[in-house]
Length: 134
Image (cartoon, rainbow, N blue to C red; front, side):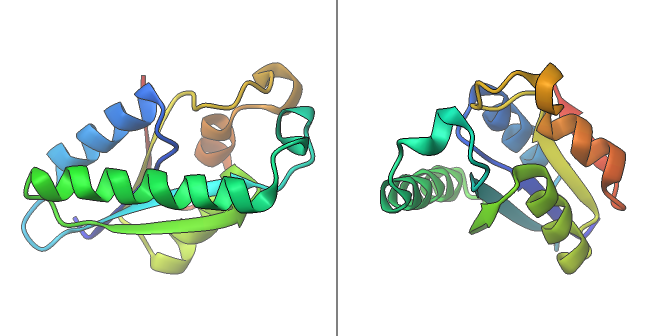
């Protein structure tokens, strides 16, 4: 298949998406987890100091990679900042991934009807195949 990109935020659905991506792996494939720290100024994120968010993101990624390693799965982790959907789409394009795998909903409490969900935006605008896990 090639490179499988998983949008990972530690949520239950992100873990389901990660498990599905692991199931899709074939010999020679590469698994990449991407966590995006949102830079959008939304009330939900305003009071969180950037350095706390960054440390938390790296800790989350390291924990996920360690868990995969325990299962015998080799993966690479990326932590980026930006609009979550736009950044996932950009990573997918830059790395020419075979597929982007993500959960239907993540940890954000932002109303999807106000802004549209990350999954909706990735499905609509990504130029790579997308698998949304429910």
